[in-house]
Length: 292
Image 1 (cartoon, rainbow, N blue to C red):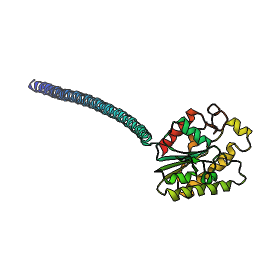
Image 2: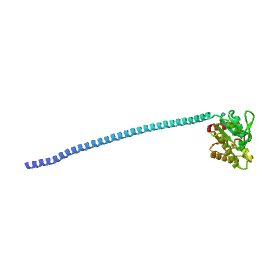
Image 3: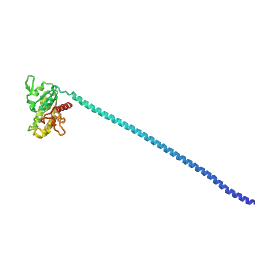
Image 4: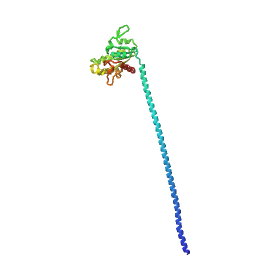
């Protein structure tokens, strides 16, 4: 009997101890699993916190970038506004310079004009009463040197070169060539023009000499006249430029401000297709003021 009881006791112990061990191990494992779950949750929470922080940082950075871009755009706008203002100021300065230049150029007794009937109209329409008027109907480059048409105080007639000797002339403006368009040898025109320039330099070596382009005619005159046409005038203007270059005097392209887009003198400004009316004579004077 005692032996049987001992066997039963041993069986109970052998059965209970493993169960206790299992229970204990189960608790330990459970605790570890719970701990792991807590750690996992903490890690997840930390990740979420980091992610949220990074997102917040990104948003802040984007806001800062946008703010900087706005500042840059504002600065660019300010720069463009200042640039436009500076351009406007420069344009105003240029206009003032042109106005002052025009105002400072005086057409008084120290200025002489040599030309034909076109120059006569120019002087008359612009009221240039004080200038030395050496204009004459039909005047040409050869007769300008030899013709006695300038009246003295005692009624005597002398050449313009003789009259210039006794005058304080600082600038001379010449426009000749229309009456020479019918000449058979254009090179003679050039030769005589150079001779006139040389003679003026002899008696007035310190005088500034300007030779002006021949003004074209109207379209109707151009199409109907054998000599007074723009093809012939263009040929002679090339010779005038050559004279200016070879004699070292100023060439003034007066025609550039008097012709239309087709290169003709406007019909409405010329009664005969050659001579110029008042408004265009004023344009002519303005050009001389701005380019002398």
